Amino acid sequence: MHDHESNREPDAPIRFEVTRRTVIETGTTAMLLTALPRVAVAAGSVGSNEPPPPPVSLELQINGRSHSLTLDPRTTLLDALREHLALTGSKKGCDHGQCGACTVLIEGRRINSCLTLAVMHDGQSITTIEGLALGDDLHPIQAAFVEHDGFQCGYCTSGQICSAIGMLAESQHGMPSYVTEDLTKSAAELSDAEIRERMSGNICRCAAYPNIVAAIKQTAGMPT
Image (tube, rainbow, N blue to C red):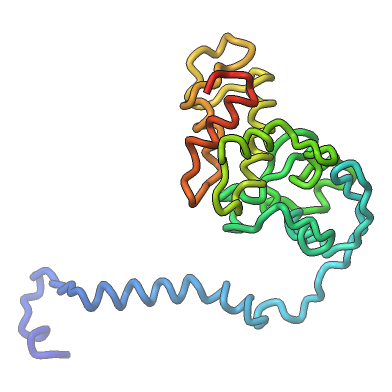
């Protein structure tokens, strides 16, 4: 026991000194302990004796064509599209469902393909950016994006376009958004604020948002 502890009065409160160094050391230790299971799994030290799940067979209906695949059941729809079917129009951006670059349409509804497993959509109708044009005739939203320069680097464009198609269908079916003012209308009026809110899940690092809004409004038959 240190001298300063032995000289302390029995009922005197214990004083702890918190310094910048102790805060940093404590925080670093906590982060390392939190990351240990994840690092161990990545290194193969946890569960390495367990065999991988057996592959499963499924039928994906993509852009009007049937594709028979045998996949690891953990394969995301995005990886199935890109790595197994060479449909690389759907982009892998954040791979966490935060950027929207991987957006596709499933049964007409938009979804982040990086957040869903391919096996969950066996037999369902899937539309990717590759399936929107009819030959040389672009889909109206594609043509509007070209006309209004709704893309710059183009990385987010496929997700933006698929999301815009799904968003227009949602508004036409009367699905409200956070900024919808009149919930009694059968379809929301697509103001700039309404479009921006409904498209907020799609990020454009080039910041072409005003042009994207204009392209969507033109497609919806609204003045730009």
